[in-house]
Amino acid sequence: MKITYTPNKNVQFHAYLLVYIICAAQIGIGIFSFQRDIFGAAAHDAWISVIIAGLITHLAIWFIIRMLGNYESTDLYGIHHDLFGKYVGTMMNCIYMLYYLFITATFMRNYVEVIQAWIFPDIPLWLVMALLSGLAIYAAYGGIRVIIGICMLGFFVILPTSVLCYSALEYAVWTQLLPVWETSTWDILRGTMKMGYSLAGFEIILLVYPFILNKNRVMLHSQLGAAFTNIAYLLIMMISIVYFSPSQLQRSIWPSIIMLKIVKYPYLERLEFIVISLWMLVILAGILLFTWVITRGCKRMWNLNPKITLIFVLVVSFIFSVTVEKHFEIEKFNKWADIGSTIFAYLYPILLSCIVAIVFKVRQRKQLKEEGGTK
Image 1 (cartoon, rainbow, N blue to C red):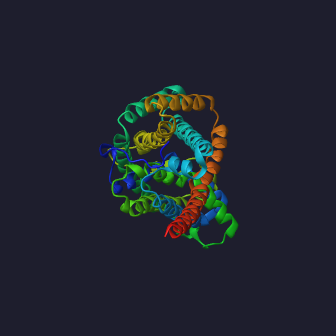
Image 2 (cartoon, helix red, strand yellow):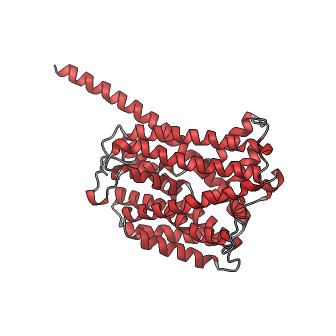
Image 3 (cartoon, rainbow, N blue to C red):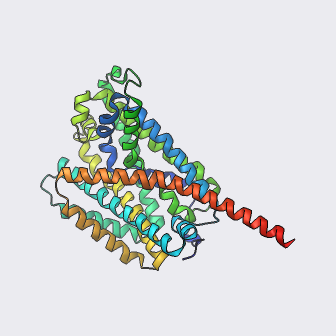
């Protein structure tokens, strides 16, 4: 496998599209339910946990892009091959692909649970999974540019939905945010760690980097995409704290959807049905990105046909989702996904960035010594 990879011009895209890609990768089904876990750890100071998690996300993005800047044009798979060699590098790449496979499956299963709980209680699980899989196959066959187009559509679903949550401010009790920082620092940090699953996805930069035309703009647009996501999560968290009582927020499984129930127009009711249905575009964008990462890795390492790999990935996700039926089982897998996201989106990329910096420093010194010896 070659370390440096430069794709054809017809599949490359401009850096500003990273805003849509990062939003699609970060915002998924977790935005409906993340408040309960964060509030359970940090109580009314949960909004502080969201801010800290957002700042750490920006820092992690800075580390990732600084690391990628050491290479002319490569991705995570190439970096692993460069640092660890063929066999260890391949093993690391396989671990990352398994992580994305697990995230894809949990992504799909959580969305199907929302549909069954709120819209169609009796709809068969396999039917919704088959619909999602069929849409994913159809869109993914169009390539990376079609996937980015779906991400853009998803962004314009996220934007108005986030605004609709402001209707809850009519019933807000602002004193529920006080006193500030009453919760212990450790509990606030625990809440920060629980944001890992919700904010993960920005590390997709590690895989799409070679496809970006103007790489000098990657840092700006990556940070803008993450900033939009962080602000959306922060505002929804704060609105949830001032709208719900503490006991209500701890009992609510999907607080964001409950807030949408109060939005009513003379010509339109039960808006949450429309939002959940449209949210399939957001979920589809995330599925497409994560499956593209896996198919891309298989093609890079073993030159496998991406279309066949995609079908295999979705079949595995389908089997996984069908076997997980109870809510407590889904919650258990969500906790594993939370731990995995913290490791693979935050800790490992920062560690890898430090390793790359050290290796390139050593290589540079070695090169200077060799040049000095030849003179």
